[in-house]
Each structure stands twice: as structure tokens, then as C-alpha cells.
Amino acid sequence: MNLKTLVASAAVSLILPAAAHAQAAKPNDAQIAHIAYTAGAIDVAAGKQALAKSKDKQVRAFAAEMVRDHTAVNDKALALVKKLGVTPQDNPTSASLQTGASAKLKSLAQLSGPAFDKAYVANEVAFHKTVNGALQSTLIPDAQNGELKSLLQSGLKLFEEHQHHAEMLAHGMK
Image (cartoon, rainbow, N blue to C red; front, side, top):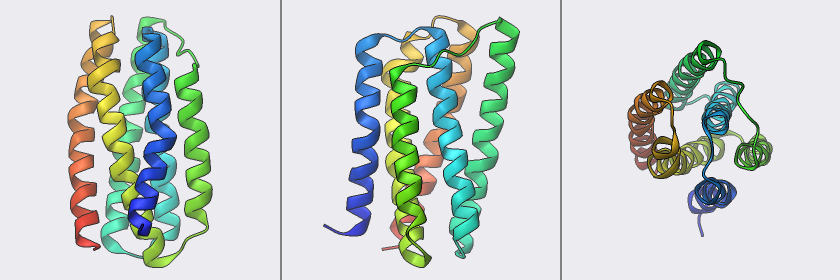
């Protein structure tokens, strides 16, 4: 098994139990908001780590895009929950996402150079596939508030573009 496959399978194995739990538990809007915000914060942290470690111009540009876009979406999410008077509610899914992300950041911190770049990009592909799948199958359908649902749908369009960008970047690294 090559490094890219190992990293991708590790990322998916860390996130899929959380997504499966979200599907089984039918999250409420406060939980959905927390899950979405947590996923965005995770990608901001990964992007910042890549900006600190990578020397590759394409990887750095992608990481900067992740930081910029996920920060912007999270800012919109915070403004929406404030407007609605909703407090995002921690839940097993968001906690599992955060635990998995912490472990992933630690493992990526041990890498450098092209090994880091490949592992980071492979993780971004796997992470976006998983988050996009959760948005499509659970978070958007289960959201009750129209404004929250609309924000999640807008986020999904952007995150699908991120996934495609990450896949193209990964393909170029082979």
C-alpha cells in the first residue's frame, strides 16, 4: 500500500464513523451547525499546517484557498446562528471529527517535503469526499431551518470544487 492510499484510508476511517453516527442520530439544526463549523475549522487548521510546512507553490496555493474559503463559510455560519439565536450544540459526530483531525494533524506534522505534500493533498481529497457525502446525505436533508439549509447547499457547491481541485492536485503528484 502506498503512502497516498494509506493516508486516504486513514482519513476516511477516522471520519466515516462520525458520518455514520450523524446519519443514525438525525441531528438537529444546532448539532448540524456544530458539525459543519467543526469540519470547516478542521480544514482551516490543516491548511494553516500546510502553509507552515510546504514549499510547493501549488500545495501552498491550495492550502491558502482552504483557509480563506472555510474561514469565510464559518464566518457566515457564525453570523447565521447569532441571527437565529441558536447555540451550536456539541455532539458525538463533531467530537469524533475533532479527535480524528487532531490525530491526522499530528501524523502530518511528522512528515516533510514531498511526503508531507502528498499526504496533505490525499487527506484533503478524502476529507472533502466524506464531508461532501455527509452534507448531501444527512446534514442538508436533516436541516430544518431554510437559511441553514441554504448555507449548507452553498457550502457544498464550494466544497465540491475543493474536492475537484484536490483531486487534480493529487493526480499531478503521482
